[in-house]
Image (cartoon, rainbow, N blue to C red; front, top):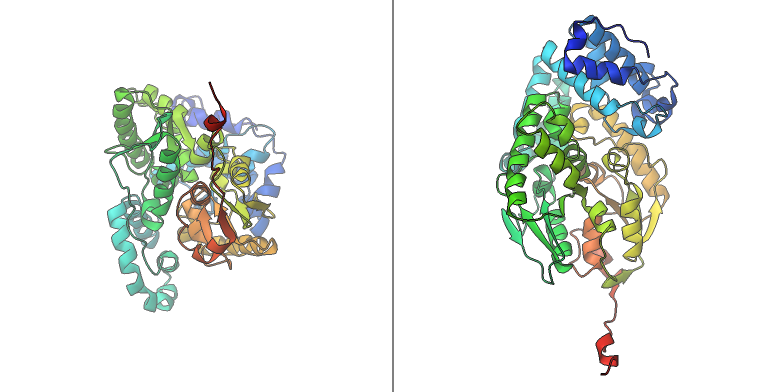
Amino acid sequence: MQTNFRPEQLTNPRIAEADAILRRCVHCGLCTATCPTYVLLGDERDSPRGRIYLIKDMLEDNAPASPEVQLHLDRCLSCLSCMSTCPSGVDYMHLIDLARGYVEQTTTRPIKERFVRRLLARVLPYPERFRLALKLAPLGRPWLKLLRRLGFNQLAAMIELAPNVLPPSPKFEGPGTAVTEDDRRARVIMLSGCAQQVLRPGINDSTIRLLARRGVDVIVAAGAGCCGALTYHLGDEAGAIAFAKRNVDAWSKELAKGPIDAIIVNASGCGTAVKDYGHLLKREPEYAARAGRIAGLAHDISEFLGKYELGPPKRWSSLRVAYHPACSLQHGQGIKEVPRDLLTKAGYSVVDIPEAHICCGSAGTYNILQPEIAGALRERKAKNIKRVKPDVVAAGNIGCITQLAGQVDVPVVHTVELLDWAFGGPVPPGLESLARFVSNVPEPKRRVDDFIHA
């Protein structure tokens, strides 16, 4: 793509970065076939290629984004399916984030939008605030129709997504170390996250149990918190950098205490963000090198387990599991098949969901900010799941789990919860009715050592 930035514009490192990304696009349009919003809406401006043109013109003009440009950029899910398709290697992820930051810095949104976006940024990344908000959410349910009539569709979507009953607090909240029950084979740091530990704390508990039973010490570092992805995708780069710096500081202290084999993330949206810390903090002199090291250590839980010998499962089942590869896992991190393979080795019958590359519509806060499009994508995903007739759905991201729960006729759980169950953990919440289809693998009465004589 030919760009027309003025020389003085290119002295701005962000514009120079955008220019380099834009020049890689060859207008081929292959991205349009895999873009969820283009597939739904059929509008070129709601395709990656169309948005690239809009971003190019916006940045070249060096003017605030028009309402039209803002609308189509807001509609982007950041699912990154286009990046898996693009033959030219266009770095759309960083381009759309750069454009969002530009929009927020140069335009003023309507008051309703500003209110909702600030509310999300000030509540979701903080577990205690988020937990309180979810407790208050039922009070708003009688007013859903009125909220929509008044144009507060986003607030209504927020209330509808809130669970009716909050799960109990996690058994292991940290900070601290869950010491392995076996001989130590590895030490890892785990990101406990923000929204996930409130919505489904059993995911963290399952991760810790599974690793601790298999020789891995799990550290939850004091001072670590939200990964920063939520605020970053809202266009608040400064807020995202602040969250990232806090995590880098907290994890650097643990790295100084002794060898760490990996930083484990069990929400794939967060994992994509942490793996990008080197890019996010590259202009922060005191953090750039440490952030790069942190990014290199970051692993999705399935990615770590895929390289780690778990041994034979303790339980075997006939459960039919529909594996939903979260966009942030298959497109953002490129490890789509790893969780599927782990589930198969653990004894589950794994089936693929048709149109697996199409987003479910969660996308961080997208299902709140763009409820109509998110709802259409959720219905499409639910129909495809029902077509394969599973007993349970497995996903690697809390956003997907929340988006799909209650939309299909079967439970939706995290992949690591099923793995923990197969390797000796308790029945995951919501799967109690399926426990009769899972049986313990008989333990041998004699060990190998019993057959060896001096």
